[in-house]
Length: 152
Image (cartoon, rainbow, N blue to C red; front, side):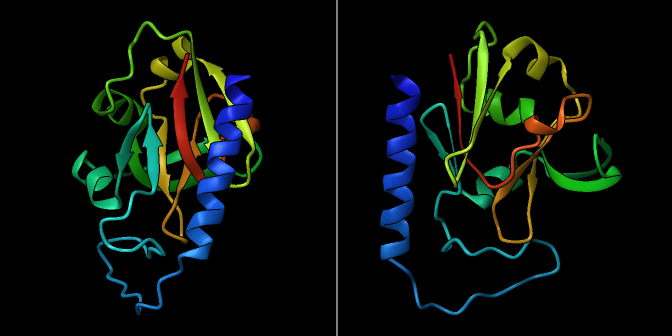
């Protein structure tokens, strides 16, 4: 039931966001990924805490070469997932972490597995969103265009 409500809320927010489009011109810099989000607009909600791109970058963006289960070694730039979870106050005693994509896809992983992954990243994608880079986990865990992370 909780997943259904969460999914409905995400879909409603996505619908509302597309209805409120911004005609402002986008700017791109070499230091930051291209973003379709308006300046200061939240791109990721973690345990009820909203993060803008600037908030995430302030946690310490870095580039790591990670082994994707299907694509092999690839460079990813983003923020270590544990830093994001800690900044949002996600309890280390949580039993599961769920990643929800903008299209409604979700993946649930044991919290112990997620927390044990020192190199897991909330990676910046070319559209200004977040993709999960989850080395050592199955390809289903590498969720694209994540808009919400919850714990349970």
